[in-house]
Length: 179
Image (tube, helix red, strand yellow):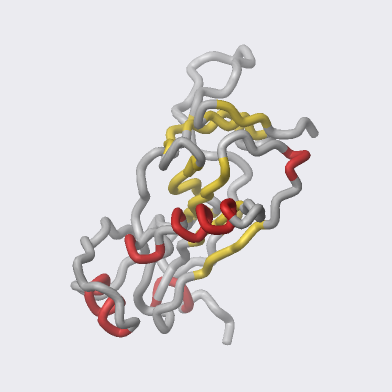
């Protein structure tokens, strides 16, 4: 398998193909809402994706994969009305938050990485799984923005890759369980 290449907010991933991210600052790029799972039907167990969804190719000839846009935040899991405000208040965080779009198809992750990262960089990876008592929350909420954390780590000479995961909550996330 070929290693990934990254330049100018563009990532050539060996399995997912080309991904277009967004520059947060001159030093950091973010790849938002990369789907990692698919949901066939409500309450069903999710399945792992091996590629990002793309428009169907209308030809039988092999073509290079089109670039997948990961510059916008995706939906969070379906949860109660005003959940962002409830979450902020329960964590004693500022309550000036915006509600996000919600959808059953919310299995996505966001990756924040220093510009110019290569496979040889061997950077540590911090994986953030949001809390919320399994009924509210999102790894993409404004108050969980990883930029400050990543900047401080980089300034200390310890750059890292930050991965934030969204997952299904409540009944949609747990009714498929055999227990």
